[in-house]
Amino acid sequence: MRLSRKIFFICIFVFIYTGTFIQYSFAENLELNTNAYTSGNTIIFDLKINNAPNDVKAFGLKIEFNPEILSYVSWEQEDQIKNRFNYFDCNPQNGLLTIGGGTIDSIKAGESINLVSLNFNILKNQNDTLRIVNLVDNFKNWTVKDGVIKNSQSSYEDVNQDGKVGLAEVINLLQIVSGF
Image 1 (spheres, rainbow, N blue to C red):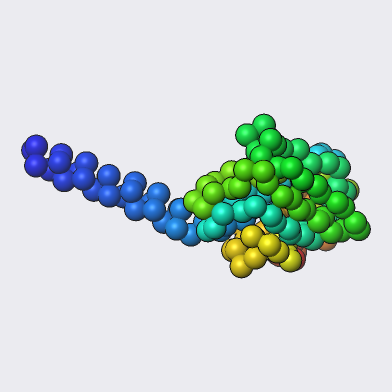
Image 2: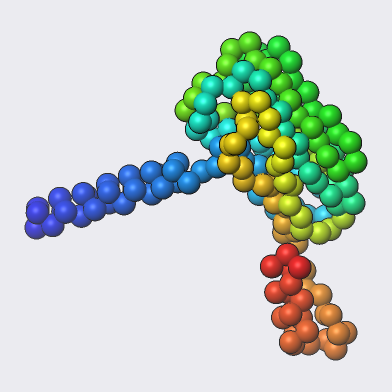
């Protein structure tokens, strides 16, 4: 009985260790989170650095978003990162957010931090993707994970107005889930 417990705990340990290793091995270097929302809300995207592949003293990037769906409001930084920059700014321009900065105290290789939180108002009840593009300076050649917004309202829509759930409603639901 004791041997089977040891084997059980060893298997659990290996499973947890492997899962953690896989999670960190496949995380992108720059990542925007996925958000669920309900219509008419403000939504926050966190731009995170995961296991920086190199030291960062200066960086730049752009985030593309659909200005018919989202309206940029502001950006915020947590105290742990705010004092590390002698320059940091986010400039919006018609569906494009340019972010850049220079550090006093460089972000070290291997470090993981929340770089900035971006606040948007939702204008249109629709799923969309925020794309990280044009990485420059010390972010050049980093891997990215784009941000996604998903409508979390679970409302039934009677597509063909027949009062029943049928094929038309199923097709509509599949289109919503798949993002079409």
